[in-house]
Amino acid sequence: MGNQDFVRTDLRVVIVGCTPLARKVINSLNNLCNIVGIIGLAESKGRFKSNYDSLGDFKSTHHMLWTEDINSEQGWIKQTDCDLIIQCGWSQIFKQNILDIPKRYCLGIHPSPLPVGRGAAIMNWKIIESNGCEFEWGNSLFVMESKTDTGDVIDFEPFLVRSRDDIRTAYHKVDETAIEMLKRTIPRLSSNTEVLTKQDESKATRYYKRTPKDGIVDLTWQATKISDYVRGLTHPYPGAFVPMELGNLKLWTIDTTRCSTSFEPGTIVRTGFDGVVVKTGWFSAIVLHRVGFEGQEYWADELFSKLNLKNGDNLIAREMS
Image 1 (cartoon, rainbow, N blue to C red):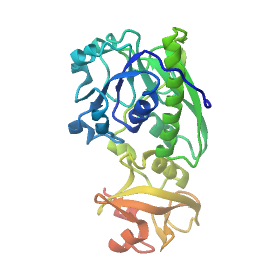
Image 2 (image 1 turned 60 degrees about the vertical axis):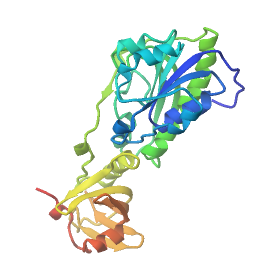
Image 3 (image 1 turned 135 degrees about the vertical axis):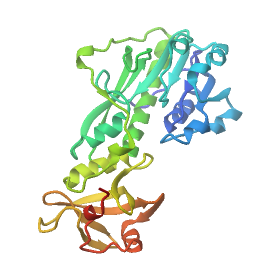
Image 4 (image 1 turned 180 degrees about the horizontal axis):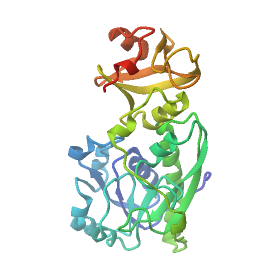
């Protein structure tokens, strides 16, 4: 990494994406290559996707298309006469009819040190599994194949996820490393000096798409585990939550603390301007700051007052059976 002067290439590039990463890639590569097309996700699908960016403001400066199905756009992409397709933030699998279009490669950006961490929701799962510890991770630039995340790796950039990071700040690191890799790789492709590395299948691991029920928090867990769920699923993702009879209590921002075992897990220990303390497993508790209820976001003490939840009440006792 570091500051470098990059020489503009003649490579013709189509960018496919629907997240803030796609926006950053477009802005970073404008002066490095010839962006001959941008494909975004139609709002009819995008409104159901976390972290969605329509990229709509690029229509005035670039050849732009929105679609619900990338695999139906073979004709449009062929007309761009592209050397590269760069996929950045698109959950649909590319079929072979699309992968075969560019003269050089269809490149994907994947937030893991491939072949470790193939699949979906990688950063969410990694933070959830972190046990409150920092961990070394990385971002891979690879050649896309019809089978997901298995193609040759063309570049890699490591990064560190710290215990203070949540999913938003972790993805900032993913985005930064993606830009660094592309700035290195585009000139190499232009001069035919790229190096491809086959993935070692013996080291492959895979994560799977998360479902809403994967965000359920059990207040008998230790506070560190609950904190990892909250960090891994906070904005712009759907959020970790405690299911109660009154409705789901979303946990957007929390801290952890120690607490006497004289309280049962789920007990509201203290409510105040500095947060709501709720007893969790063993000697731990969580301090609720920002929470959500019925689609609205609140300071925890204000919501608990609104719901008439008082010190000594037990949230587990209010959980749905």
